[in-house]
Length: 264
Image 1: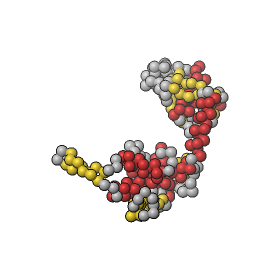
Image 2 (image 1 turned 135 degrees about the horizontal axis):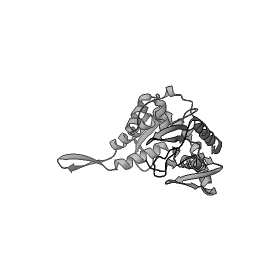
Image 3 (image 1 turned 45 degrees about the horizontal axis):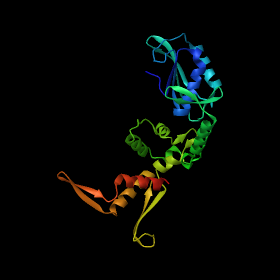
Image 4 (image 1 turned 90 degrees about the vertical axis):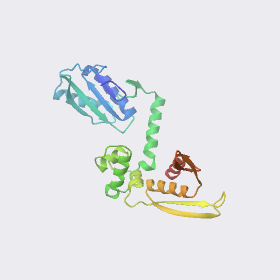
């Protein structure tokens, strides 16, 4: 195990201040990580005398000097027969400050943020908070389709356990409830509508074909792609002994455009 952007080693609690700075820096860059006391920079365990009082004092120091408050998991771990302390922490309220200053993790080092960098971090956080899809909605978990969520999570290659944990991993739920985006993707009764049409010219005056669809965002993306493929020219080429259909519009480019239009 080596130091990285999310893992920091300190030999002892004599380096507590530096350790708290690392916590803030890692939180501001990655939103979570690990801090070890009793290990050298190369990861080798050197250990020190630690007990329950040591853990309480360390927890109190973290509470006193890290803002906004975090609630890490602090425990004694034995590594190569040496007693060490492991601190696992996470938070979503960046920027974080240690001893009144903000830092950012760069490789395995902690760099103090300048006033401009701190301003940009705060602005980015506010933009994220003010997005409509990150606002709380009136829906509750019972309004969401668990099977849809499970299929999406498995397709994304994420581990599945519960609906709540899956939504948390996807950033679709907070401490106070479900966000708007969760309802757009996984509602049991979707309320989104999409109108697709083919026009006989460069204006919308002459409509050749039109179809309205209802569903969630993922369903509407699929329906829009099917509709376009049905209404454009499909060529053909031979791939060995097999025929391969070739749409006049690249499917990946088409899908990217559909997603951008629907999400917008």
